[in-house]
Image: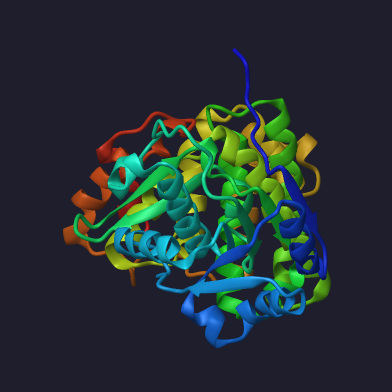
Length: 382
């Protein structure tokens, strides 16, 4: 079987990287940017860091900000209309997963108008054309949407999220500048950081994993586990580490898939609007325990990457527990809740479980599961 790797054409990393944007745009003949960024980033001046760079270079742009934390079909539809009216020829997506997922969906529909029904993009849609060129500038260290071929849209009518996987949606250019992440509040830093760790761990143990993606994921686990506490404390070293670690995780999981932590988190986000990173962080240790019998020796390497000492002298049971305990400790240290008691409701468990089982991430889980077993995992955290 041939394994495929899809990455950005170009990526820039490091403090001040946003200053390369005008040159990258001009070298490609771009004329006007459609800037996708959420209202909070605009209000707090984060988006302005990039638009100031554009203005200094004399480059035209128009801002689109009708974007929710969990972007909806309606956000995408209004974005498509706004792009058509703007006269723009490329997109700059500034933000976390919400801005980038919206930008990807808008960009795909503009160049593949036969998919204007947003729901038709669910799964692996047979689009024919690359999306509108996207320059992606992350402001959170978690989703890695700037390097992935995935995006997630919320169907508010049906109370579900759907995952879209399309090689045509990957941003042309990623600009990973830790200075853009310095204003993230502690809670968001913690949640998005645990999302990144979940990407790395699920990507490492997913059924599709192979040598190259294992390399990415183990390095990502090492960097994230060594950087997240510092990032929450807003140290430059922590911010820089998380900016890199989450991107490396994205290089891996985008190409091999995830598992039921993400399936279950998507359901929580759709029903309760739970922040995705928080849902992942709460679910991850319990699902790791559930998946352990189907992971061979991989938990030993997870424990090692997270800094656990003496793993080579441990039994399989011991190093599996050590890996789970290391995740629990990191999650607690950065202030993530330990359970779903304040989030999930018993009356919704059947719907949550059925939605998670139907989610596009579920088939990649290393352990085959069922609706009932997923329900029991939710219940274990309540």
